[in-house]
Length: 407
Image 1 (cartoon, helix red, strand yellow):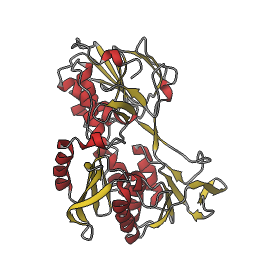
Image 2: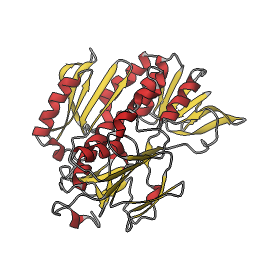
Image 3: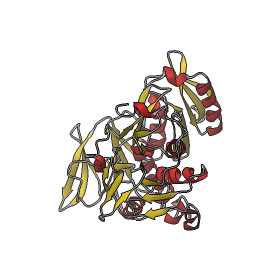
């Protein structure tokens, strides 16, 4: 890693006097908690762009959107528990610039926060369509406020179009159908999550959506939106069709929030580029969705967008801040809940891998599938069989199959 190679083998260091975590979501909070758990007793600050205390994002597209959970329920810790961290939380004040030499973070309100160590945990920002800004009836879903605004709109919606056939788009479509909303799911893939799951599991997911009344318009890219007097009226597809809508959710993925680092001198390439210790420069670390780090087992640079990674990576970052000098080499993992399907994925089940059903059956929609490349297991998928899938994950790790299945 340019600029970081001389850091990997350093000896254990003394604890820094002040650690500043930029980002008050799951990865930022988990870093703060791991530092305290590992015995760090000095000054600790968590800077957040949103006005809310740290909260969990996975329930936003499901329980919160459906109205099953109140906003308070997604808080990761209650205020009393946060107070035991002895950390200063500075909220509703986005970072705007980082001076790496001084380890000084400038904020939108004019603050300048200096620290011995800065942890970048600024997460993601949703991608948008051209012409989307300012158009009424068009939503994204990333924050708690996004989820509450979308839920309010769904309660009076007659036709929703979800733009995006990945995990988030498919979850929103499933939740909205459960609320009784007429839903169309649009995207370029042949089936929902085809790139992540491959044709077998993605095809089953498509069947599940269709059976539950989702109108699937897949295989054609979305090119834009139509409007009348500032209100959205439809979604334009590359094949010339226009899908009518009075509400649109754009779920085309998200980009790492790194704009505030543009003049920092750090390496930015689809995230904050870090070494195998999640270090971007001396005294600067990356964690969570924003961090793109060198995975030594895979021998590649990887960035993962999921809750599990946020917590696991935070533990390694905290340890390395305190001198443990450990590489971060996780087995990638994500899960999704849609209708009655709970899908758990371990490893890297590439779409072109050979798939075998090793437990259960697809007909019963309760099965475990393994993904093979060059004779090695590179991924495990459990469909309504989470425990069995987790056991198969051990086989994946034992065979070092990830080395054979580089992304």
